[in-house]
Structure formats: C-alpha cells, structure tokens
Image 1 (tube, rainbow, N blue to C red):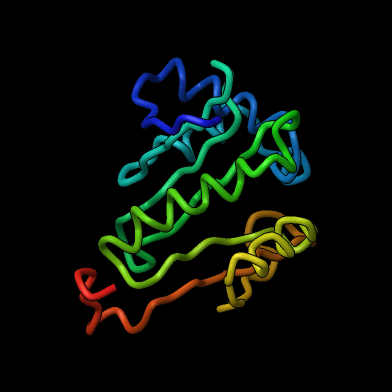
Image 2 (cartoon, rainbow, N blue to C red):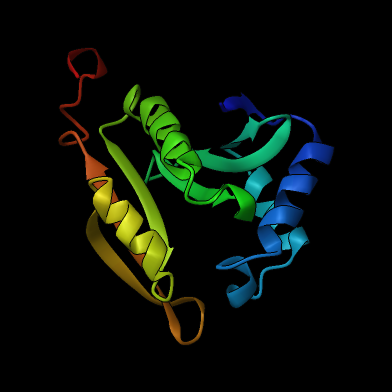
Length: 159
C-alpha cells in the first residue's frame, strides 16, 4: 500500500512543507510553508515521505541530534489519507530508526490537538513534560516519550 523513502531534494521538501502548512496544527500555530520548510531541513533532521498510489500520503521528520536524540519533529498525514493507517505506519517507521540508536522516542503535541494526543497515547506514549506558551501564546506543547529504558545503559542489540 505505502512506500516510505527519504526526501532529499529541496523541491520535494518544499512541496511537503506546503502541504503541511495548509492544515492544522500548523495553520492554527500560524506557521507558513517557509517556516515549515526550515523545520524540515534544519541540521540533524531527516524527512521521510510515505506515498500511496504514487501520491504523497504523509511524512515524518526525525532529529537524532541534541539532548532529546530521537525526537520526532513532524508527523504529518495528508487529509485524504487520514484514518487509513498512514500515521501509524510513519510512526512505527520512525520508532524503528530511533530505537536502533536510542532508548527514547520524543515528540511534542499541541495542547489543542486532542486527536493527535489520543493517537499517541494509544501508541504507548506518556507525558514527559509541558512547555507553556512554547510556540504561540495561549497554546502549550506537551512533550511525550516512549522508552525502552535509561539512555546510559541502553544496548540496541538487546532490544
């Protein structure tokens, strides 16, 4: 059904950013395509796109650098592919990549994005923190974590 591949070209990344900026939560946060593109292409990030029937179905951006190594920066599913398992497929893909190097997967969900929060809870994510008014005033970002254990004793070979 769905093929996942690394997006390498600026043209494809710009197209992904444009699709992303045209819907919530990015619309509600006031992020335009230029800002979304910067988020997809910042140092240390890799964006992978799921396609179905030759059409982009969604994408996931992973950041393996910094303190929260194993951070899912973006999980986006195109409107006509929502509710069809694409989000779960992209999440599992990202988790597999992250867990091969780190015991923790982190992500944030906007406080107003109740559907996404329910989705992540069903996938085994726990609340790890809260960033009040982090991106825009009046909306918090909830830090979520899925873990296989402490960072310093993690051995990916023993999964």
